[in-house]
View (spheres, rainbow, N blue to C red):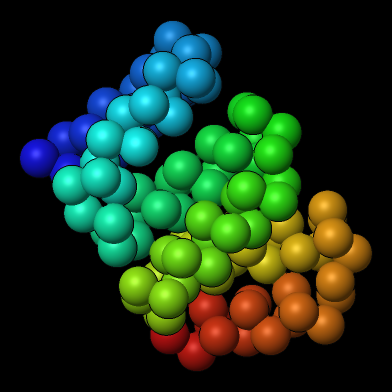
Length: 102
């Protein structure tokens, strides 16, 4: 179950501090359902926050938004990444406006 794998990955990362194991669970979830927006978004957050891979996080947020263009968390989290890491204020503003409109 993709939802269960995604939820378990969050617990493994947040409660146990095991980001690599969480990444493996997200990989399994995405093997089963490559366009599962919640898994893509949560994995992107893990990549950025815990694994310090902002480029991979960017790619994952873009996949999440391709799967579900109005996904609020993906829009806001990606906007934050653009603003804080890539210093793309215009791009961040576009995403925040999309999130506000959805």
